[in-house]
Image (cartoon, rainbow, N blue to C red):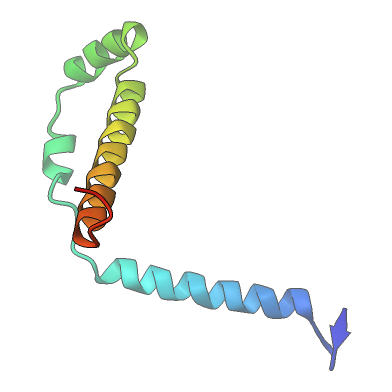
Length: 90
């Protein structure tokens, strides 16, 4: 669709580009990771061993499950606290 010689797709593309520039600028304001030295200092034999362990025990999947469980427990307690504040439950 052409409005005054300017396509809506071009306008949307310009808006998205500006948003990307803003987020890039905001991320560049943040300090570097404090874990960079730790990650680069891990010996390659440890990486290889963890690869073997991860083949039998899916560590990343276990961490995802644990994170989801902790988030659901946190949400439960926050909702319970709010309901106690408004005296909906005892």
